[in-house]
Length: 281
Ligand code: 7PM
Image (cartoon, rainbow, N blue to C red; front, side, top):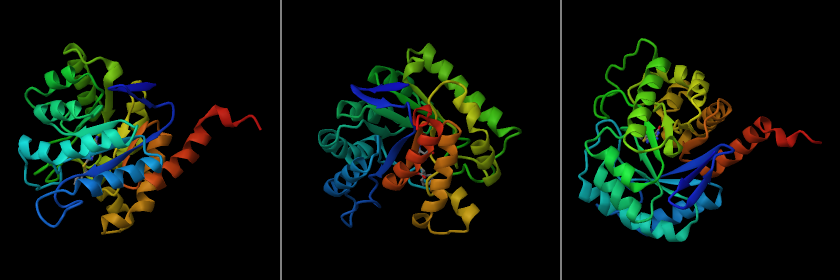
């Protein structure tokens, strides 16, 4: 399983780390509205040196209650970082957006992967992504970021999330985005209770059984906070590593994380146990 990310190859024969690079003004801020491009690029280079295989650049906060940003503002945040990063590292760069204009501009600037928490449901997004020619991660979300955690409801969460993603995959294929370009993601924390998130992690092997690469983003999320009692997101590394290991063991091929070096190390152990190649001695 190898994804061609605009000429940069992402080898998914083992679980890989997608490192989060937030370029919202509350991260790498110079104190005002502007993101420091230097600080963001430096952080990303360090994560690649630690073994991250993909950098996810996001300029629109999907945080519940976050203020939506328009396409121009989002481009102003992410494009300078993508341009500099594409020249500084050899791994593919992912653009975390739902907006067709941002997808196109980001791919023109050097991004080779589209990460869309709305699974290309915005008007024009499927057509834009098709034209970009790069792989796309389709994520499940129930509701909208502003209100999704109010009252998440499912009869059978794994069945329903899987059915949604399969439907989006078929729609993408019909629109000219082939399966070889698609990645699926159950969307941990996006319109899910703790019980739903645990069921999804327990049933993650069913997503992997589709044959499509599975991406899982659990790092530092509220479910880790709830299970560990740790209220501070930055202190949830150990719980996040446990979740990444369980997801990889169930067949997830891309782990979206904040702590790249530590997760790369944990996944090396998972890979050794899962891979036949280590049994010779
Ligand atoms: C508040 C809520 C702050 C959620 C931050 C988040 C995912 C993603 C995010 C994911 C994919 C976070 C999330 N999560 N993209 N973007 N999968 N594909 O914790 O799970 O970073 S934002």
